[in-house]
Image (cartoon, rainbow, N blue to C red; front, side, top):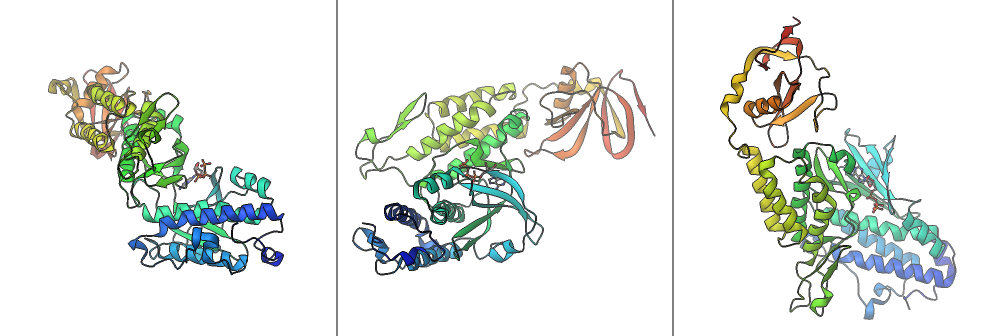
Length: 464
Ligand SMILES: Nc1ncnc2c1ncn2[C@@H]1O[C@H](COP(=O)(O)OP(=O)(O)OP(=O)(O)O)[C@@H](O)[C@H]1O
């Protein structure tokens, strides 16, 4: 009994629900109520500044609204979500709501998945954003429509995943979670929800594998910072059930979580230790069941092991500076067997970052290296193709990050084609300089702000 059995047919034909068979309809209603109830946990807490007006009856039958017609119930459900989302953190300052979206033109397809369709749009202030809505062609919609035969009802059901995403994004604010810029929730004639998000680019693992180690380290470190936050977030410990690279986007080189509807907050309940087992294809892990019946630390473990198997394994150790390799091996081991938690893992990343930024990883770098070079002040090279090296910041030339000129000289000495280098004003995210390594200098241009290190004996000619 879902509290709605026996409602008149008119209640389902008001433009919100199609007429479908009774048992299918009731099953869909049960699912809708279930999803709706599941969302309430994300709205409670002092941050919301209001209390939910729901009367929870015995076993929460009909959400205490049994006397109302179904359409009225949906209205009340909508009222709760609209109110909760509109008073959620950051909503007052949100840049985009329904009005803003209605005036938007020219959308571009960005991506789609089982549940959502993502389009690029531009706000009136010129900011490009990602707009998420229910994917009418997605597997979620198709399965639901096949099962229940009610497209409008299914739209509502699937929308709750997006509403959950909005509610979670309001509460989980972190530099490595995409920023919610606003949302639109309309329920007349049918429920339509749009989330307005910070725009990123899809995480392309193949592309990332070809980027310099420093950038791959950055992605892994972004992930570690995110997991550190999720381990003790305002919603308690949060577990990302679906942990695939496609759940993340990249914004200015930083990894950000974008698909959060499959996250769960709070530790798993348990009766005994056996209930707290994590099963992965090649390994199992377990946590003790605490006296208050929770698998303490299990969410953190699951997230961290997934970070190891989907990210660190591919991105972290390859082509790292040799002196940092032992520390990186340490991270690979301690996350691969979960002997360290997220706190210790973050510390290990911070230590590596410090050694890298400060140049301390460059042990025994001889200062005599620069003696092989002549400093030519007041010149720069033309932006042109030159010999390639891997992994370079540019595809058609050899552009690498360096701590200082000595490191650049050492790199140049190790490349047979290299005849010298210039160091850019541009910095990488760690504050290191970008050095352009050259095989010749037939294209020099006067530039008071630049200097070139030319290998002694290398021929060069200025064009002006
Ligand atoms: N903020 C964003 N900026 C740019 N592209 C995005 C953004 N968010 C999502 N996308 C793209 O849209 C795709 C679908 O989004 P999302 O993962 O939220 O949908 P989904 O239906 O939950 O997907 P899945 O079936 O993988 O769980 C993503 O894989 C990503 O490529």
